[in-house]
Image (cartoon, helix red, strand yellow):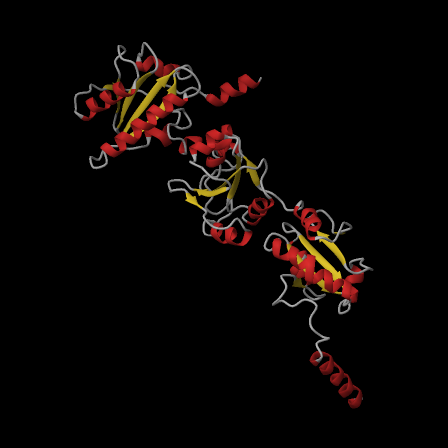
Length: 415
């Protein structure tokens, strides 16, 4: 018996010294993950709720070796981090291969996210065809954003950082889908096509693709690295929150209440330069702020582009002008076709016009532009200068008017 073992050991040593026993998959040379009957569950089945995996079942023959060193390893390099590319040696683990219904080699078995069952790949064994087949299974949590939905996207789960990709393509790339899957419940991903020039200009995007992260009350962060999974993942991981949406430090209430997850908790006014003053936004944009509320009054449900630019320019000018004076102006607009009780309070004869609320805790007062003046940049500036100079006359507001109920109005319109 000892003689038999000795001869076997000598045979192993001879094969190693002659190079015949070199590993088919060398972790120093390949990006393929070797798995065994003992590690298969932990490496593949454990991650099937969200991850895509491909497993090559092979035997030690020239055809398999050529495939491993060529297309399969190239595939592993290209999809590294996005899809797990693994391999099982059926010479060493025949039971696992049999249980996986593999009877020829090489065979690639695809493991999509649950509940889709695993299945053998029957297409061409080229890197291009394999990559195209596998990447279609990558789950996507990317929102394709239209201009009208941008504010809602930015303010739904407002504490969660927003990852924005501006592209000259029509749909999100596989790379972006994979990142959205990796950071599910930690980052929100939005895709914007360059055809939406309004959004491109708003975010000052001049080259494509452009990746940035937007957070509330913080400067936008722009990605400057290679558009590859690993460096992008590492960069985004810095912004990843430690809590999960719907729990921990979530910023919304229970489902069904104002502020619950989904569209109901969106607060677009928090990211708008000149937000609309409504029942829902009043506290955030004006009445819980310490300062003066500059309210642009107009008829109609939208603020025209030239009106918005005029107000933004004035806002920037007065921010700079008042930097050291301890005075803060908050800028907004109000739809007087809807807020009829405020129309009665302000007694404005022509629109557009401007009123300024002095927003003190003990009492609320307002002053307004004269009806003989148009709401131009110069006239608005004159009104604010008059207030700062102590020459404006404010009118007390004993009781705040009732706000229009937008939710009820919407329900009636739908009926």
